Length: 269
Image (cartoon, rainbow, N blue to C red):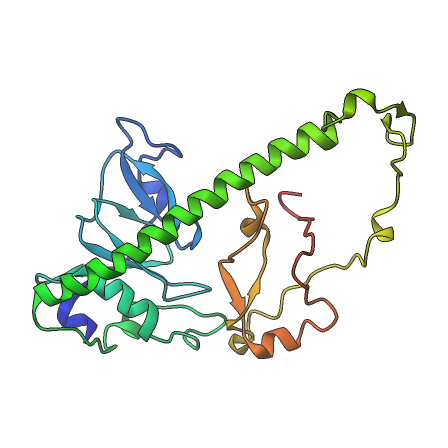
């Protein structure tokens, strides 16, 4: 059982920590929150609550995502921390949780993990620490490839933003020197271009949130995009929360096909 191998803790309150959004010589200890983005990194503090070697697990929304933490850190609300009681490969356990444990239906209004709901879960692992390490070393190679690909995606997104601004805001695209500019309702645009309404390009619809009080609406069947998922992301390839098949059925006529454009209309608009 999980409780035989780990002490379990629930994340605390951010207001109790000295906090910086960026890492500095003083604020060097990571603060992790209940998020899948950037492995849950929320900011940095000048002190830490947990030693390296622990595992964190997301405990609200898309629950059950485990991350091995190889440096001292802090944990804030809606995240659980597993602190080893013995010599054990945390990286092996994190991968086991992510691939073998199903948390689709936990909690009440929405998926939510608590210490009592996880402490009796069963784990299977080689008795030998060395064997655990061998398995982990193979998995680490793939994790490294995934991380490198994520960095490439971030770089490509940055390049895409720069190209868009240069070509379609400043109109300095290849061959622009010979292009004649003409007046339009939006100001000067290249000759041959047109100004149209959004609705000319496709259907404009409004999203909605399936009732959170019905836990059957949430699971792992389809990504559910919310405004925080869009922050600093030109392309959305993952979301903090997903819907079940039942939840998707409540979204008739507003389930989006790939390559759709999403615009936030509340909060950060």
